[in-house]
Amino acid sequence: MRSILTTRHALTGAVLCCLSLPAQANKANDTLVYASDSEPENVSPYHNNLREGVILSHLAWDTLIYRNPETNDYEPMLATEWHWVDDTTLEMTLREGVTFQNGEPFNADDVVFTFNYVVSPESKVVTRQNIDWIDHVEKIDDTHVRFHLDGPFPAALEYLSGPLPVYPDEYFQEVGLETYSQQPIGTGPYRITEVIPGEGVTLERNDDYFADSPIGKPQIGKLEFKVIPDQDSRVAQLMTGQVDWIWRVPADQAEQMQSVPNITVDSGETMRVGYIALDAAEREDSPLHDLKVRRAINHAINRQGMADNLVRGGSRPLYAPCFPAQFGCETEDVVDYDYDPEKARTLLEEAGYGDGFEVDLFAYRERDYAEAMIGDLRNVGIRANLRFMTSPALLDMQRGGKTDMSFKTWGSYSVNDVSAITSVYFGGGADDRWNDEQVQQWLQTADTSVDPAVRKENYRKALQRISEQAYWAPLFSYSTYYAYTADLNFTPYPDELPRFAEASWQ
Image (cartoon, one colour):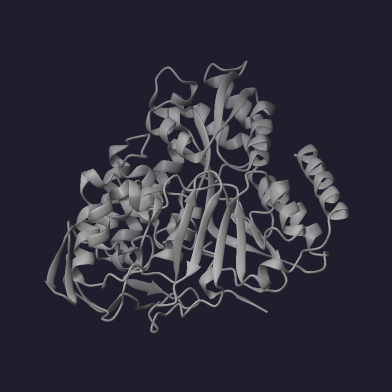
């Protein structure tokens, strides 16, 4: 771990000492350029599961409900009122006078089309857990709809305020998904004007954005999202004024940048969870099929060291597949796998792997984190080889049963409910690699009960078994570092959603 940090420190020093301070061109052009290392494979919000896609979704589309990030209260957005008719029927009154960015009026037809489309198999939605609680949506009249659930789902409002935007029915049905992904239309504060795979996305302010939106009308005229895979290149472009905002800055770089004039650095813990998925647990020909091996892996990883020395900024070790602040993240009975290389070696010996074994660790981001994990594993005799690739490629391999272990992260689409993470990966869906029927039953009960006590108890039992069976090696919470030009007014939030529509120039 020390060698990784030393190398990163040297690279950062070279960037800081040799480059000029940021230019002011972007402020002059009223264009905020932000950069990240990954890009969504499809900008349609229902057809990607990357955080970069979530950001674009909240810029170009609106949801029916808005959750205030400061109070967590639900506020009107495209819907002005809502009430439960019964445990499985939610009626909503829609806002009048809203138009999509192509001039198409927003009404009940758009809501009905959007949700009936995304729940259909042909929609090919990537994260079905976000919508599979919906049976269908019914139009009452132009300003009223009813959501019919396939069972009680107490987190419905939370999901409707997060990852579930509304599409224009006429335009989408006219052009189809492929064209819509290149020329998308929403009702949001910005309109996507260009999508260039491998390079980025450009957006322009929607000057017709509805005045009563809880977001407010955006102040910055243009946004540019740039894909820059290399971390040091992102820092260099920030320093030379080619980029205004970057994030996921390694802690050592961020700490050095705090002393640089005209650069602001912010940090804080987020809802994002880092974990190693032990994908091969069900394969009898894999060492990971043995519970003792999976527990050995958990004991081999120095979570505290990674949180303190790599992630930093408020990161903490985690032992359950959820974020502590989420409803239902009951962790009193999970196993806290302490960092104990000797115990890990003993477990491997008992499992018949005293000489260790070779395995692939797949990853798509933060290569230095993955390399630190590989060092910990090799320290106990597990010879892990890094297989680094894009997120879509890794997802395809995982779902095809072609991975051994995967270092990944999940931000729960900023949904404050355990169903947004634990149920996604252990509830029997496309990303459940373990198919534990008992866990699936507990999660189903917890996801659908209207009794909070019943929900908590069943989540507790599911988390306990997932931990005891070591299906995952939960690692740490993410503490994102942001660095941006000092003439930008920007407020970071714990839900890891950069709200550029609320940003402004000083």
